[in-house]
Length: 377
Image (cartoon, rainbow, N blue to C red; front, side, top):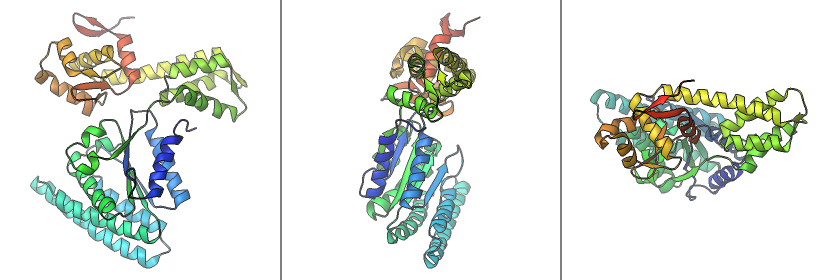
């Protein structure tokens, strides 16, 4: 049940149908973990394949892994599969992509051996690939959609810079229908800064928590489809407990369904049992994140949690911990880039990636001699 995302999906699909002249033809979805970015991507991919007939290349970025070469190969496979009946076109396309992909291999090898940058040549190679596919799509009144999930882990240099430059040349200058839809954590905004005007100006669509109405619908509709109904007070308890956080909504629905057994009416007692079980699972997730942190990282997170949920100025954290900016810079960087529990907000501010994690920290931690300690049972 995909609730509360119709406007986001319609907005993106309309931009794709309009074509490269639409400012949102290539764009980025951003949101915290667990809000359903991947589900939205999957829905868009399905719609584009089934109703528009476009080739769709779905990628997921992995930390420290190459993205451009796998993208080139998968693009060749998807385009050839979609247009397999157009023999001459596919043969030409295969040849062009293979030659250009070989150039990417050469440039990647040169970069690895020299330690330098091969971005200019890489842009040219990727541009040739996108141009070949884009021209083939345009001749058939089609487009091509490339989606990359977890885009916040793509290396800024050269990969993101190369991708952004190539797409700018192909879609903005040549007006060819090759769309790129990226999805990642909100830090993606910061990662785009300083690596090219195209990515810096990219249209962003934020995927956030659900409204109370959408949360209720997400719980009620799947149950009603099976002849099961919620009592009003049971539904109200689950909606309030979820805070609209989609992953928590899923847990609450599942655990409450299990508590109700085979009954056709979900009562308040079922919702209370489901909420308690779901909270234990959420607490375990928060505990595992906390256990990965060093003492100083925990101190840092504690200050943010007790000053949140709004963004907290870095200077406030420094004052609370009695540390200089230099002493805390590596801690802040680790919490953002390694543990991904913090996000840079406005300049000089940070916030926790998950509001629920902040509430858990504030509830379970306390200051003892100036440092947060675990409460004893």
